[in-house]
Image (spheres, rainbow, N blue to C red):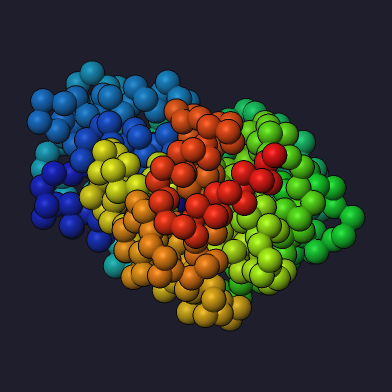
Length: 442
Ligand SMILES: [Fe+2]
């Protein structure tokens, strides 16, 4: 589903526009309050198809600010302005006040490449966007693939770029990316067929024994991204269950044979692996380090913790949310109230999702709900107690280690990170876990 950012301060109009955009244009509407908030989101989600904004919010020249940003970043995002904005009216569609929702959805449909045949029937786009990364681990596609190009400022056309018989590799796809392409488009009737094809190919690749360490990590990272997107869009289905199983097995394999942390970090950064997977992979690795020093260690403990690492932040939508490691971080962040609520509840929400995953056993659910030190999975505990499950304690310390490691503003050497953990986690069993990490690094 395409995404549209809407900035509308009148609550009644906001509701009418959102419902109709969603119903008739089939676009997911995200609300923002001003230009800065919208720009912040566009930095994270450059694939947003359309921004609809009031020309001004209070004294702010909202439309002009957003237009400048879209232009300077060369985004394919279209813009519709509600009300007059003389400075940009030659380049951007400005709808005169009062704007009727019928006119707005008609324009939105045109900007997003949707055929509006009948405003009373539910309209779906003819082509659906899929991230370029869906093409990283396949060498052909089961259907023709298109790109969206701008014909005129407010008019888009879909052009066939990959034929179903074409053979390509990752470097071909990267050439498109280098030119700034973020998404290909799949004809809507083929979307299910296409995603099943990609999932099956990824599973096959992840199950291969002869993958190099580098290829294994990059393929698992890509699978992680695809699982996250799929779960956030539609929840668990059979394909994401199978793909996540293959990914977790693959991650466990690479963690057991992992290079040292420094070269691993260099590899993750230089290959532009997503923050979500950097965090997930390093977290599983730290858990492995700690577990390998415990007398009670059994291989299934690493499997449990890797499973939890894979899904622990799956409901979070931005890197900013995933970087939060304390209530103080959360309160001082620029996140909206809704985004803060998502962070507060993400452990609990992840467990709720697990009811649809057949392999999520009670151990996994226990560690997942306690992953931020709270028994009920709500909030973040600064100094968790002894009452938690032993595996949860390992997970929490490992998570805190990795969050510091990946934060450019905090120390990145293990010698400097471990004392920070010692100050935060004062209870005896946590101190033991920190000691185990220390020994591992000696
Ligand atoms: Fe988390």
